[in-house]
Length: 144
Ligand code: ATP
Image (cartoon, rainbow, N blue to C red; front, side, top):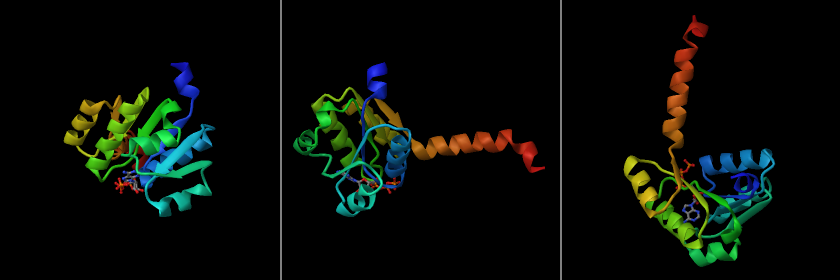
């Protein structure tokens, strides 16, 4: 709905994907709360983003303390660790977040994320690859 659309967004995991997402949302004027457990990532991004916090996102109490229970939409951008991403989604479900988006790195990972309660699962690498393939095909004549 319109309310959640204009509300704040939290991005968990400031790797390549998560940090680009957080920066783009901030550039679009959205209030972004970025979270990473790695203090080096937190330090690196704190000069570029308004709100950056250090926390282990699998820890429900830590998320609650950061005020996450009031954030309408959360993107779990953790990729490499299936365990961390699944436990983070579980903590967000426990907090009652209305819209939980999560990044999957495999079909199995996606199934687990959905079954613990992620509302939307995305595959950035697969989606980018597919889009690029379509772009290349549709621009075939440009190369001639
Ligand atoms: P990318 O492809 O986006 O660079 P990656 O798959 O290489 O990501 P990941 O291991 O998924 O890297 O980590 C992405 C970020 O998520 C890292 O900065 C990492 O510190 C953070 N992260 C991992 N686990 C947690 C956690 N439990 N709580 C908070 N942040 C976490």
